Picture 1 (cartoon, rainbow, N blue to C red):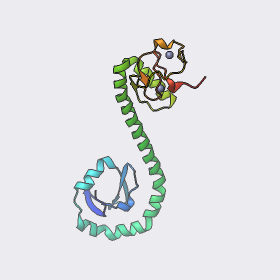
Picture 2: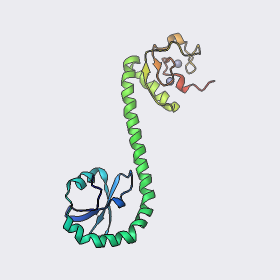
Picture 3: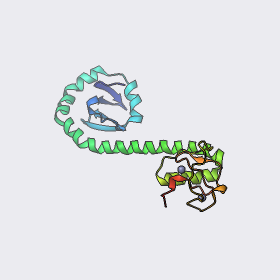
Picture 4: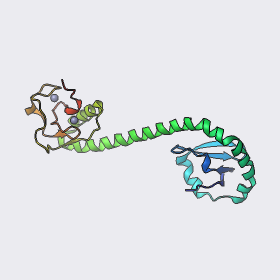
Length: 189
Ligand SMILES: [Zn+2]
Ligand SMILES: [Zn+2]
C-alpha cells in the first residue's frame, strides 16, 4: 500500500495523500484537496484501490507541496485532535458491527449442524436461549462425556429427563431438553 506522500488525480481534481493524515483503523481515508485546500473524507473501501492504482503525479506533487506543507504545519495537528476522537469512535462502532455480523454468520453456520442433529425448530429455540443467557453459542453434538446433567427434571419445563433429546449443548455440556433448555440458562435455583 502506498505509504508516502503522493499526488494523484481524482475525478478531475488533484488530491494529496499523506500517511500522517490517516487515522488508524478508521474506515475512512483522508485526502487533501488541492483546490479547496482542505481535507476530504472518503470511505476506504471505495478509495483504497484508486489510491493504489493511480500513479503518483510528481509534477503535481511538486506544484502543491509547499502549499500543502504550510497547511500541514499550521492545521494538521489541530485537525487530527478534533477528528480523531470522532473517527475513533466511528471506527470502533464499525468494528463492533463487523464483529456482530461475523458472530451472526458463525452462529447460523453452527445452527445448520445443530439442526441436522435435533431438528431446526428445537435447534433454533436452543440457540435463542443460549444467546439470551449471554454464553457463546457453540451448537449441539452427540453426547460425548456421558450424562452430565445433575437434575432429574428440566429446570425450565419440568419434563422428565427421559424425554430429553439425545444431543447436548456444546456450550455447557448439558443434555438438551425438548423445550430447548440446557445448562446455559440455568441460574441454580
Ligand atoms: Zn425442558
Ligand atoms: Zn447450554
